[in-house]
Amino acid sequence: MGRWVGVAGLLLAALFWGGMIPLTKYQLERWDPYFLVAARSLGAAPLLWLMMQVTDRGRPAPSAVPRWKQWTFGVLGNGGFAVFYTLGVQFSDPILAAIVTATAPAVAAVTDRVFFGLPFNRLMVPGLIASAIGCALASVSPGSGGNGIAFGGGELLILLSTICWAWYSTVAQRWCRDWSQVRITFVTMATSGIAMTLLYLVLGATGYVAFPPAVPARAIEGFSLLWYIVTVMVLGVVLWNAGVRAVGVVTASLYINLTPLVAIAILVVLQGAQPTLLQLIGGALVLVGIVYSEWRILRAGKPAG
Image 1 (tube, rainbow, N blue to C red):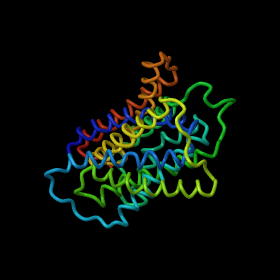
Image 2 (cartoon, rainbow, N blue to C red):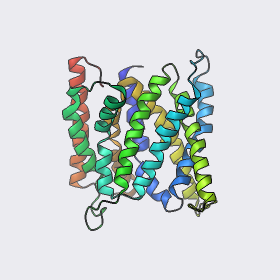
Image 3 (spheres, rainbow, N blue to C red):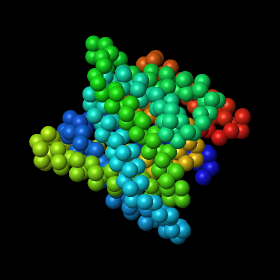
């Protein structure tokens, strides 16, 4: 896959993932985190299976990947990410959550180094720093932190979720080298969906969470869940996996720092919101970081790490 095709996919993924945090906050008002994680993953599996019947038609049979590997990257990678991230959003200060989320490219670089011994492309350092600062600034909404920034405890969970996702992104491509991205994503959602559903049922049986789950009070609540499954879990993850194979997880994470800019644009278009000067500066820094990193990499003729 060409580099620029992968980049185009990452830009679309950033578009789809722009509503991830506001949708999660909205859905947590009706459902508990464990139900959301289970419903999103398991709900995505049938759609991905149908997509796989189309995209894999006529392709050579994929190589066999041991079941334990499929369950490992599905449950630990996507399942771990989903649980830690959803709980993290629920119990974190919005400003600190934005700062932690903005470190995703750096976390991906460290994760690749620790788990896989992959070298880090030092040409990306200035761009990573600019992008991280910009993402944090663009995510800040005045007054979102209440009476100031307060450590809520969920920030550490968001960091753990970022590590899980970075590990999954690399290991899935390594273990499934000749698989289509739709097949990889289908296995990811099917395995993690089954595991998370079992976890939810166990927690429901013990009374730790509400069971059965609440019925949507309004049509918009059910639609928001369906929209999340289609855009974030299906299209977003397929495009993300394709982008990782094309440019590497560190560069892919750099592009995903565009998500707060997408969220701001959505609010401007749909609600007439006015972005703050801080958010505009943050958005500019994210774009500068991406453009500068790509320019240095292409100029040096080296692949991104």
